[in-house]
Amino acid sequence: MHTTKLVILGRDGTLNEYREGHVTEPAEWQPLPGALEAVARLNHAGWHVVVATNQAGIGRGMIDMAAVNAVHTHMNQLLAAQGGRIDAVFFCPHTPDETCECRKPKPGMMLEVGRRYGVDLKTVPMAADTLRDLLAAHAAGCEPHLLLTGRAANIGDDQLHHMLSQVPGARAHADLAAFADFLLRRDHVADSASGELG
Image 1: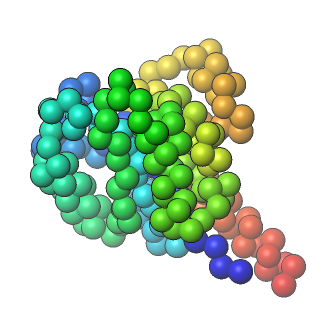
Image 2: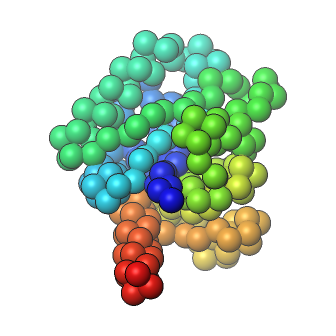
């Protein structure tokens, strides 16, 4: 049985440099070192990559849909230059006080990804740079991965241990490239095992 290989990524602090004041125009979307190449390597190994991102700047009136689309067009152009692609961007436009179901740490965006792609979220790794995203991944049934980039770049060992201890099964990786390495190694082991069985 063929299963769609799908991975969910956060955006700010995962793919691109985190900015306190929101990314409001394409020039402000600056990729993290090695992140675009990591997406391309996953794509080439058969993985579909989607983004799930909280964008409260929309609800606060700091950025409109035209600007959001321009930022994501820029992101995809940079990815294409590396041979990679993001299949889809799911985003929550609401502010924290709107109590929606889609703003992480709620699982709504991930559940929508699962419905859209027809996948069992237990098979879907999700990687991002905050405890909020780990909690969202766990609530949706995804496999939670923390990247030590963006907002998690300078946390100490004690804080890291505390974050991971709050989310069963959570793992930490240095960055998106290290996370991609982990998935590709695991793929290789699984393929080797199935080859031996076959």
